Length: 258
Length: 324
Image (cartoon, rainbow over all chains, first blue to last red; front, side, top):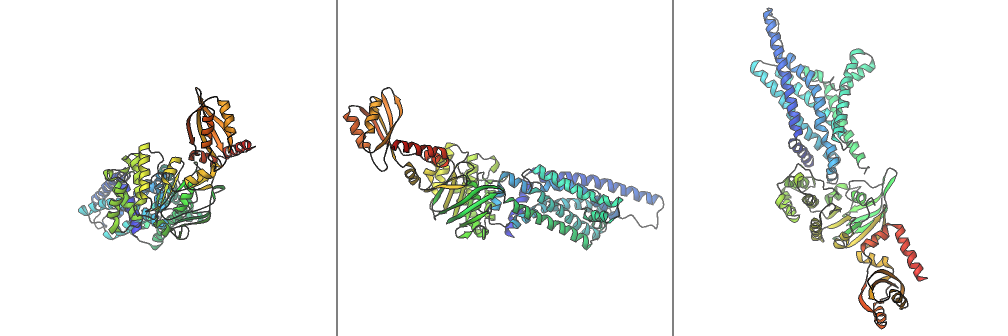
């Protein structure tokens, strides 16, 4: 564990001592801010209209449903498809390019300790991003009273979703010395995994259902509604484990080559 | 301390190292000599556990690197050809990180850090970013990284590559200073390095060991005959003829001539000193003797002989012809 934390600490340090962390955080908060503003404004407009139409007796519009859910499920899941590769692309590619991979692999660390250390390091940066998002949601409490319980599901879902992308992105990073390629492969695969969900829109056959089930964003839907469903948790955990496992295989294969 | 037994390493169909065996005793400095692409780096990577061997066994401090990699790695310090440094870390941050992953206990980190920083003379840059250091300093940080956990075995891959002459001397002295405290394997394709820093040399070429021995032993073994350089003032042809008749001389070869002085290479039978006879012959004939010295085969020549087949054969053919 000490070894895992040493590697994780090094990764985290590397993020915050290079422009990557700040670039990702800036882009992320800017987009978050824009979406937050527009959905809040839309919500206010809708509420105002309802009141003007004499909507007395009808239940008030839900902040969770009108602001938080579209932000998370509609926008941020897609934005992360683009941002996560920026976080993961350097994990192995940079070590391979600079030769520091030789230091790690000749140190008394197991491959798994290195992998988990890198994964945790990137996960921590992601947790910082997530905290920024929920900072926006915190603002809602000043003017309204969103339901707090769904937020827990939202937070858990976003964390699992991000972790799954990170694990896969880390795997892509073991393929090459070139960070750009590692990032581009990540982006391409993430987009395909996202688009798979669209198949279900025109095909209700088994293929369509399977494709939709594999798609990364489908399983986030329940979380964004505030529902924690075991099958969704299992799906994301499986993707995380798969990513870690494939990374381990890839690192193993890396040793056979010059 | 390091035992390499019948090591073979293949990358797909290409054989990088084949059937290499050698031992390094505790406290010894072994030079690993060979042209680029001979398999030096591959062998070192297997010893350090970076690459698994295709065949054969490697034991470091008694631990098989394939079966107990963590124990072996804990006792090995490794400086790859390019120092494995993180450019955005400061020297101290970097060394502290390496100390942690090498298993130095939290209590000892500060002590080890201070000691290593001092030993490798990086004290005046300890708070600078490694990316902003000169190549010489970066190399020393690389060496500090290899020493931080006070390993029994040190594996240094071309530690002086790319340094300027002053830095080369400094690095060499640093390695000399480690002698006795650590068992060291050092690879190089630069010859003077070997004779200056190593007690024993393994010469490797296209993945196979071609010679093992002390620098002196190698020189002696390869010569086969002694060579004497003589500079004399007098008629070249007559001198050559006279020298040919000296007992024990195999053949005489003119090297160069300036004005009336000629420098000759006199090859004699093994273990036979013909210098006194040559001097007498010169003086008897009334020529002037300016210089008389034995010329050992330089490491450079040995290296070429061992690693380039053609040249070796040519030399052998020459000596044969002379004998007949």
